[in-house]
Image (cartoon, rainbow, N blue to C red):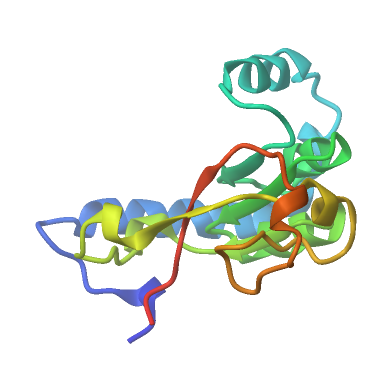
Length: 165
């Protein structure tokens, strides 16, 4: 069964219909939305987010509801690893093209979350600042595929979700 089409649970049908209607609207109006929001000055929002992160940059940023990718592009231009997620297939395509970032398609109202505790699905990875500057975007030592530069990595440890086998 496709995770985007999980059956509704707990009387969620009205919320799912609203979500699907909203996503359909964004799919139809994607170009107009992008054109109408591309030049908005949201620099104060960027600054507030980056100042609130209690770690040393570069950061790994997940943009939920990334739209056409304006914010992804900005964070990527600062050297951060930005990943987007959106329910609109039109926005996903736009964001990938505009930002150059990885962008995932998911209607979060239909997401099927794993039942196993979050703690078991997480593992520690150490981002490698050497690799991040290159092309592999891999992680050191305890991540697959290992980059082999664990000794040179001085970046802080972060948590990363792993896929179930």
